[in-house]
Image 1: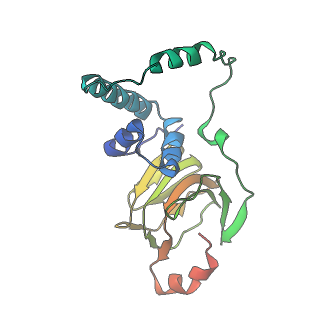
Image 2 (image 1 turned 180 degrees about the vertical axis):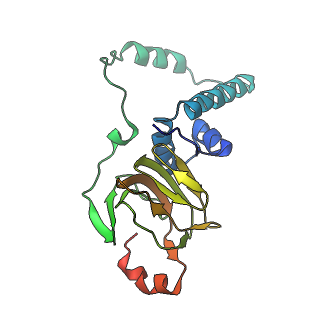
Length: 205
């Protein structure tokens, strides 16, 4: 199995650990972490650093009875039965696959859409060449199955592609198997060629 070679930036992992990412991007990062022990370890380190910084912060005064209320809550919480670890996507409803363009199908992920940010899964047929495009905001992608490549390299299962409005690319799906990704997209895609702009209405991304 091909090893994971494309990872979230250190800034992204630190933001994830501190809980400052929006839900859409957090989900895509979580999917990468579920397949990448290296980045999972880095997140644990960032969380430990954050905890150490909190310990050094001045203590805030507690409301009367606050500690007792927390202890009672802990006592009244029953132990959860042993079960398999929850996958990041298990908490969300997935829509049906629908056609969005030649060789492309999309299914929605029930992350609340905020500030023109949406999450979806994209399935591309083997050999599909996506049009040259850029974005009006960020596009974070984690490959779940199959592969694609563009000018920044080849992306297989677990690989993470972190793009923003300054980047443009023209992904091509690998041969042999469909490529399935989970994507957090802010804004919309902008096809760059003259032909692309003519066929833009055909693409429902």
